[in-house]
Length: 338
Ligand code: 13P
Image (cartoon, rainbow, N blue to C red; front, top):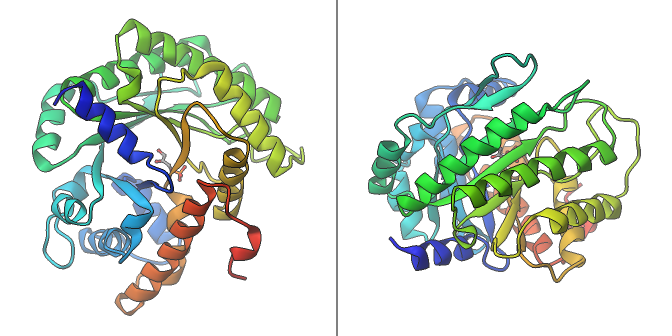
């Protein structure tokens, strides 16, 4: 697949009104989420849950792509259709998480580096055979006392760019995700500073390694105070700081920025995305690639009960529609259910 196809896939993922569902939690992460609601995590329950989300009738009007985990891309939905085939039938682009997780960074306590480059070329070619047309790699940058180090930002940026160029070689659109975490009591100003520095390092590496900027997407965190910071920040302030930071650093050639929700509530993540889109036009599409902010209402309605399949889909679709409205600045808080 050539450059033209990469560009068209990247643009289709951020088509107006549309965004990405991240359903690529690793098995231990999904286990934690399910078990916190008293749902046991088995191959079957994970397959059931992901079938429920990805086969929601009508959701393809708002969902352009779904990021799967290795387990799911090899499974079939409860109707018996392989997940990639089902997505393709519904007009949804199949994505795959290809990193193998964030591991302790040697010589830098408290920091992590994302692994998964070994054998990546072969894995990408297999995933493409299985139907994947885009991929995700997540690096995590923690803010703390003296953190992050330039070393941590540097090694993660280097790995992200190595991943991106290998994806493009394989005809797969890389979604490049350097997530600055919300954990801690840092201020919004500190988050701005770290996000800008991280993105600078990333785009330097992408340039060095000759990535095609118009054949990729950036998955970014919003600029927010840490979870434990007492600072009160309005929705408009978050939107302004985030857009200003991105405008400073992200080249206009990148077709879209898709946000992660990062532990914000569904309502906050949606309100912030809405406010940012209201401040447009922007050089890039501003869209979503949420996991928790799209899935939480569905999980709460489903509760692990087969009989709640329809209720889970209904809750998921409602959330998806509100998030899609935020793509056009048309979401209002009174659309939320009490
Ligand atoms: P959250 O939206 O839950 O932060 O997850 C997005 C994601 O895919 C993180 O890699």
